[in-house]
Structures are given as C-alpha cells and as structure tokens.
Image (cartoon, rainbow, N blue to C red; front, top):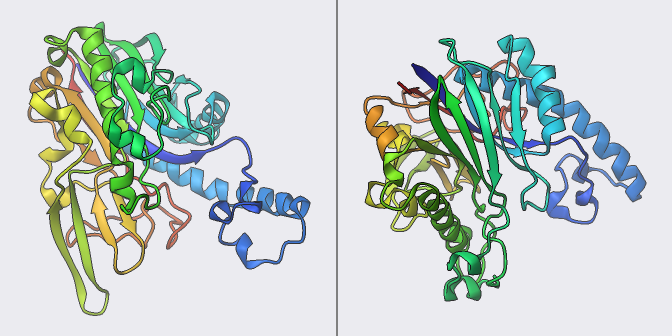
Length: 370
C-alpha cells in the first residue's frame, strides 16, 4: 500500500488584496514603485489591477508544480483561507488532475498577514486505498511559558514569556490511509528577517525557530509518549526556513559558476532529528541535489539550500529505508542558478523572476504504508 506525500510553499495564495504597500515601501510591488501615484484610492485601483493580471499565470504554474508531485496528500504553506484554497483547487488543479483534492483543511494561525498552513487530500490513493480524515488539532495558542521554552536569548530579541511560540501554527492532522493510522504535523517556521542586534537575519531569527522546533517535538512526544514517539507513524511537513547545509554560488555566466557545499554549525532542524527522533529524508539525496530554494541578495550573496522538509518518524523512515524524495524544480524562475547536470525543462511561460510557481520547490515522496 503506497502513499504519495508532498509539501509545498505556494507563496501568498490570497483571496484578498494587500494595500499595505501604499504606506510601507517594503510591501510595495516593484512595478507600482515606478509610477507617481497621487492618492491611496488610486493606489488601491492599480494594486487590484496588477494583482489580478499577474495571479492567473502564477496560479497556473503553481498548479502545474502540484500536479507534477503526483501527491495523494499535499501539505501547503502560505494559504490565506479555505475559500482561497477551494477556489484554487477548483479553478486550476481540477482541470489538471481530474477528481482532484476533495478534502481540504486549514485553520487561522498567528501570521499577521493571515496566511497559514493547510492540507489537501484525495479521497483515495492512486492505488485505491481510502484516505480518511480523523481530526485536526491546532497548536497555535501554546506559549513559551506554557512549554517552558522561554530563554534569555529570546528575551534579548524582545520576546515575552507569555507570547505564542509559533509564528503560524503547528497543525496536527490525524488520518487513516487504507485503515493504517498516520499523523501529519504541518508547520511553517519563522522566516529569516532583517539583521538585528548586530546579527544577520538567519542568526537573529534562530532562537525563535529553535523554540518552534522544540515545541513541535514536545507536542509529538506528549501525544505518543516520550519513549514511544519515534516508533509511531507520523511526519513533519513544511517550510522550516532553516538549513543544515547550503550550496554557495560564486562566479558568473561569462567565467562560469562555482558551487561549494557549506555545513552550518547551528540549525533548528537539529532539534527535531537529534537522537534519531526523525529523519530528514531529503538528505538521502546527494549533497548538491538537496536544495529546494534559491537565495540571493545580489552577486555577493547567493546560495541554494533546503527550506522545505518531509521529516519522517524513526519508524516510518525505517519502513521506507530506500525511498528517496523528489524535488520538483520546473516551476523555478529563470534567475535560479542550477548546478551542472541539474537543469530541467521549465513549465511554459516561466519568467526571469515572475511568473513562477513559487520560489520554493515541492518535495514529494512515495511511502509504503502497509
């Protein structure tokens, strides 16, 4: 009995317009910045027109990337609400994958923009095994204090003990696949923001991601028992906004690119995998082929890294010891620099920077659930 599981940050699957760019230049779209806009009313009209014009191409590409995963269950990040998800599935995915993903679940988490984690599931696997929803549990409200995770390091960055840990949620989804139990933990950790306290964005946001990872592990251990949790069937799926390795890129198109694998000394991912609690199955791929995201701030700062994860419990990983995940990169914009031998045929109408399916690549794996 096989299950195809995937995760994908679809990036701002919104059902509403964001007008915050009128007052905050950091949120203003670069095309609107070219024009002299005289009033907020004019800005709103132009923003609506711009968003509508760009969204159709983007969502066609997003749907193509999802279809390419061939997933029975896909965990998603940056979904606005259930209405947006339904409209996207019916308007785009249904035309590509037939029966489509009839089961859809999300909840309101803590993201100030309103985007959160979600899951879409077929009614049955490709092999005809039923996928049954059992229950959904949100952990958006747990605090540092409640879990005993408040640290002096967090305090130095202005966090308070009574604040919620998760920037979005840790959404617990209990299922039965062909009668076999499976629990999914949908997450989207704190992003790497701007520099703070003399540290770069990754280091400055690291304490919060570590707390989020520790909280996810505690939720799982409390659910299944600390000594037994690793031996149960569960998976953590989502955008952890962190990596243990990156592929540093130097050079240019004239003289050629150079790629170097760099190991990180600290990562929130380690909090979850420590002691063999779970396995990052993407690390079954060669080092140069683990990336799901291209990061650049110009020629001086470019790298490929893994931000998107399927972490299998120790038991589920052992059951699927030879399974190697796929990373679908056909939706990447042309500006993404691919290492030699990894080039793919992009989806139709992919642009230099946009339209694109997402800056993230879907990650998918076939699991034996017998």
